[in-house]
Length: 389
Ligand SMILES: Cc1cc2nc3c(=O)[nH]c(=O)nc-3n(C[C@H](O)[C@H](O)[C@H](O)COP(=O)(O)O)c2cc1C
Image (tube, rainbow, N blue to C red):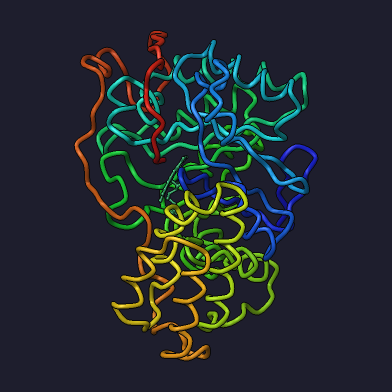
């Protein structure tokens, strides 16, 4: 199977899911070591502060010198602002690919009609996508979208969302196979990915459909593609503490044998590298605070004991991290293996279901999967940066 984003043909149809607070330049650099030539999407930024020239937002849009494609996810609910943000990033030559987030389930976003609330208003969705594609196309930059199945089981919108995106010239669509209400609970419903693929094929187009949700091991990607007929996969939480998963995915999808789970000594070496890359990027103090969450993910499934975990969760410096790693390897052994099934221990977000927050009257006069409703353009000023998708 092949998959291209713009002029970039990928080594396998695999995309790193954008994850706020995680998929920054150092994390992507680490993942690329195991599998160059995939799409690794930077964490989401809001369109409004891009346009306003907010320095913190602009610092977040950072790519490695050797990184291609440079993929940036944007979030926004005002078509004009989205268009301006995309134009600015393309015109400055800062990106090779734009992804738009229509799957963010955070209440403070959906309550104002943004994120995952947008697909419930197909004309608003259309206006945002149209503005982004119009802004990006003169530069030859592809725009992709990522969304959920819908707000809740009684309000599924994914087929229509795919249709609107394809109509408006999006290069590929990706679906996290959960509703907003589900949040991260239960299992991803891969059958909906199959339905989306079938629906898009029935329209006669050739837009690639990427499946997302609960790929924890390389074999899951093979299974998702086999079961749903999707054109590729988007991988999020499975790579938390396991950046080598991308190498495994390329192997599995090219029919090669996948290496066994890494021994503790290899994990420790990757942790030290990751922390050093983060320190170069953020400064040691900030980096070490940020790295603490990664230590829990790296250690999940390894029998290292609670005292080591506690020390990791309070690490203040690279030197202290080295010290804890050395103590750990001394006590547990560099050849310690992950517990049976440890790769599948859920990491990152796991909670749900949630109560879906949408503006009053948001669904009035709306239909589910069909295409008629009014354009309403909520303003996304003053919404804080947030995570989720
Ligand atoms: C910590 C975290 C942050 C996330 N941030 C974003 C985001 O910025 N944009 C987005 O579209 N999805 C975001 N997501 C959702 C993931 O991209 C992905 O859709 C979801 O985790 C399901 O895929 P998975 O089962 O492979 O993790 C985030 C998920 C996590 C765990």
